[in-house]
Amino acid sequence: MKAISLTRVSTREQAEEGYSLPAQEKLLSDYADSKELVLKKRFSVPESASGKQERKTFNKLLQYLDEHPEIKTLICEKVDRMTRNFNDAVKLDAWLHEDEERQIHFVKQNLVIHKEARSHEKFQWDIYIALARQYSNNLSEETKKGLNEKAEQGHYPGNQKRGYKTIGDIGHKIWVVDEDTPDARFITKAFQLYDTGNHTLRTLSKALFLEGWKSTNNRPISTSQIHKLLSDPFFCGEFIWRDKLFKNGKHTPLISKELFYSVQDRLQRKIKAGKYRKHNFQFGGGLLICDGCGRSVTWEIQKGHIYGHCTGFKTECPFKKKWIKQDKVEKQVLSVLDQFKIENPRLLEWIRKALKESHKDEIDYHDTIVKDLDAQYVRTKNRLDKLYDDKVDGLISKGRYLDKQEEYERQLNDILEAKEKHNKANINYLKLGANIFELAQVGREVYQQQENIDKKKELLNFVFSNFKLNGEKLDPTPHNGFEVVFARAKTGDWLPG
Image 1 (cartoon, helix red, strand yellow):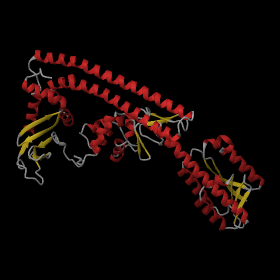
Image 2 (image 1 turned 90 degrees about the vertical axis):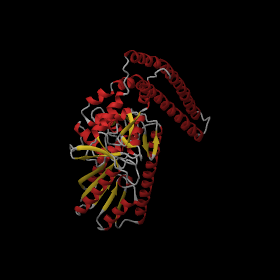
Image 3 (image 1 turned 180 degrees about the vertical axis):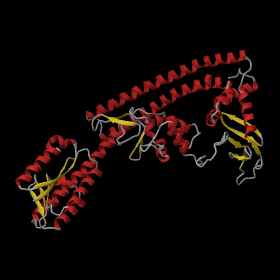
């Protein structure tokens, strides 16, 4: 008689304890020989198979039986190797009851099930299925507990993250940046470019495609995929597991948390400019605001010239019908950039020296703060270690331990975040000092050297938060560091502050 076999290993422990696929296959092969059965096909489910793969293999087995009615016998090591749920048992029962000659042999349990099997044999079959289902449910529950514990320790329990790979054995895998693919580099670039404000998801996809980032079918990365990547906190050292945000990720981040949350602000803004933009205007994207109603100035091409005007939508704006040429706006922008300059060379050199001197006190301040944070971290870490010893020694209850553990881990995470912010603040201070001042002195030249419109806009967005357009007059609002330089350059008074 013809037969088929099914072998299955669920966990590594089973494979190591003598239940490996080769061991099961030998057992079933010897059994088939003893019963004069001819094995026509073998189906197997390895330890590494996912639930979906297990389901696929089982369905293939049923399909094979349907396509080969001459096969009357199915053999397996034990019931829990065959099925662990009632739905599969019902399908096997249906197959058995279609033909009196059909049988299922469970070798180790010395059980043969068929249409005319005795009641106590069918009862055994039902009991084994219930036990197998209970084992499966318990295994699933323990797996979930293990994954949750792994997440609490700062290790992402998921399966795949673009730009990363896992190393180590099962249960002890850690995430590291995948240097074998360019994904990590392009993901970092995507965050940086989107944060400039010069890109929509669509233009970002095209820009990265031109730089070499492609999908498997040599097409640009889809906008939905880019949005998903830009929204994933995993890349800044955090991760989401079972709808909970864990801020203590142990993996190496690709970007800073400041950059990630800056990008989130842009992604979640109510008005997303430029999704269907046909033209890329030099002063578009909300850089110019109407002083009459506070709405963005819109730009159009008329008879070969570019004009800006207030839309006046649902308002009685006094500048509703005022139009201004782009060339006129650009002249005023260049004039504003000139106002940052200091013409007196002796005064210029004196300010440079003063800025360098001012860094000393600021650096000392930051160093003191960072040292204090380091000391706090060590103290809290020692408390966490002692807490664990107390739990092992039975000095505190499990509930008390979990509460205090969560509190100390939150404190450690807050200290690390505070330290990162202070280090970032120190760098920003240097930028807002000497670097901003130097840029302010050559703003016009840098602006005029840029041939690319996006680069010009990037510079203007860095120096100014916006320009208010009062009819045809431009009123600039510089960013924080530039505001100081602009105000002092206009008054010529550099001594206060």
